[in-house]
Length: 343
Ligand SMILES: NCCCCCC(=O)NO
Ligand SMILES: [Mg+2]
Ligand SMILES: [Zn+2]
Image 1: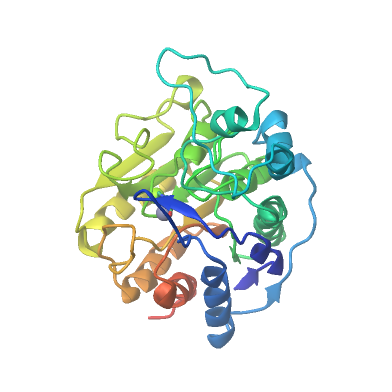
Image 2 (image 1 turned 120 degrees about the horizontal axis):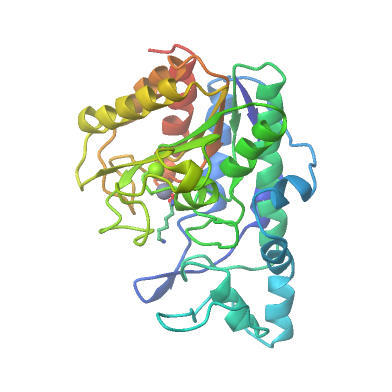
């Protein structure tokens, strides 16, 4: 299987993450991608390619122009406002307030975000753009005939809405790739999110549509991020009614239980009969993940990959979460090797 990787991921190098009232070293750190890349090489998974440049048009097929412009200029606006630290949203429109775009950078940061966990600094824009190019290069490989490709995306994307960043995400790499398939004539595309967290961004982007089926297995949002979306009664709206599926599990869920949800998801995908599959691959479902509460083990990711291959679909994997850096390489590459038949 080919892997797409961009050294530009390292331009995303924020030093802070607001967590528990402290500014901690971000969980979403450069070593995540480097560790996965090292495992890809160690396992000789296949050729490693740098991404092509696809420009802003594919991004604008999913994200609003104003949001794209905000992300491009945010850091400079923050500096121009005389701020000393990294850009962190702190003000949002609460209930009864107005959802309008302010001119002040503090207001704009809140207007375009869903939380304060995702600091911005120089290079965030470049890294987020490169991550989209990684996903789109993987999509091009699959559209060009590869059975599957691994888009080693960093920063991740599945929490990003059309005009919201957060959960360490800026551009929704999986959604942009799914839309690229659609724009290239694929009638139906499925996005399966196996990250521990709900793919709220992906859900929201396609919520009213029946050409892209969105499914996510995740920890109960009553207990974890994104907190305010991802419940099982969210099944789509309008033409999209029935084309969104959320499968929720409690703390301590092992693979033996989680795989039942995977089976439900696979059956729904088979019934939808898509022409391509995008897998938003987070491995924060791992038993040792520092911010999650499922109990998957490293061999389980081999079984996950094998099950996904049995769908028989052209498949693009976009890297999402996973924060046990010691294990992230084995776990992510196990999915690819399981897909390719490794026991
Ligand atoms: N800081 C709150 C948790 C952010 C979730 C990040 C993630 O892994 N999403 O898939
Ligand atoms: Mg998920
Ligand atoms: Zn996650």
